[in-house]
Image (cartoon, rainbow, N blue to C red):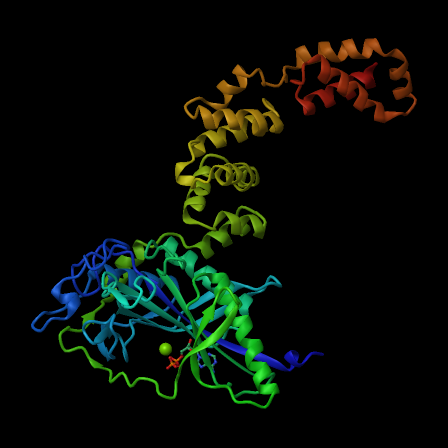
Length: 484
Ligand code: ADP
Ligand code: MG
């Protein structure tokens, strides 16, 4: 047993979700990403005296959507609060956030563990707030530059309970959160561009001990994988410290993605006192039951529900179900496909194998895939009817359909001369010819060498130019031999 097995980690994640609204949280400045520096900045964003903030209605709707999607409790009376601190990228000198009254408490994100089990990670709260601007330390030789385009952009902050046990679970949690916000169309979930950000709170303790260890907050991970790496590094670092009888400092650390290590940014000992107080310039927001129900109507079918439906009703494998629900667009295509065919397994295979590899090879999204679900359904049905083989469908017809998406599969099959012969009369002629050609083999078959069916099948196939339907042919060959 290694020293590391004596310990267990306790992890809570704080995720910032940047909302896809047109305008900012408390003003009508554009919230669009990019743009020339300091062009989306009005006097409200700058907090000039006499200006008044206004709450973005769309941001409230997005907040309620997320709260409902995680099964949280939506608060009816929402108060905003000022969080005061001084920093160059915060022109007002305070951030408008929610303190005592987050719009959502409770709820959970369900993750799949490596052993296949499901685990719910409970949520403490989700609140609405605004982002700060961006300080750029590497654009100028001597000065730090500030871009305030991001100042005031709406964020939801989702705080988990300290129930995550390792880097793998954190990875699964963030993957689910990202999938969810993308399904809801409230955030693009892009950790590389910073529109979804995660701070990881990590502590360790001896296994079984109730009391938590001192936590360290790690920031600046620009991908889900890096959050996992930072946590894994941090757990080892903390255990090593404890084993060396040293204390863990309550501090904020940053992740260095190149080295794969964390380093101290600031100690919590001289942490800010934010002097929270109710925001005097904003009325509370009252969210009614009626409004919540209206928003509920607009929710799409969520990935977890789709996943269950695909496994339980369509009898698909868990792997297939997870590939199909990975993005809303893929699930949407699959849903449409299954309104045109009941062969769910085949539909799933076409999507997860043929279509997916086409998308990957051409680096396009399913939105730009030219073949309509109805055509894939037709392809499935003509295979099932024995008109074409699966091989010619996937190797010849599918690539042709991509090039000429206005043709039908059947048209292409005709043009390429791929229609299988399942006309029994024509096939029977071929079977008769073959049997007449090999009288000794017929005798051997009669004497018990039943594997010879394969030889006759092969000959019929050859004569038909590969177009004989194997199922029909096999039956004809057997019947004819038995009668011979
Ligand atoms: P702070 O006031 O320092 O921000 P919070 O109590 O708000 O701390 O918790 C922030 C996050 O840290 C939450 O996700 C919570 O689950 C997590 N957390 C709290 N205590 C611990 C701990 N001892 N170890 C790991 N995570 C923790
Ligand atoms: Mg915090």
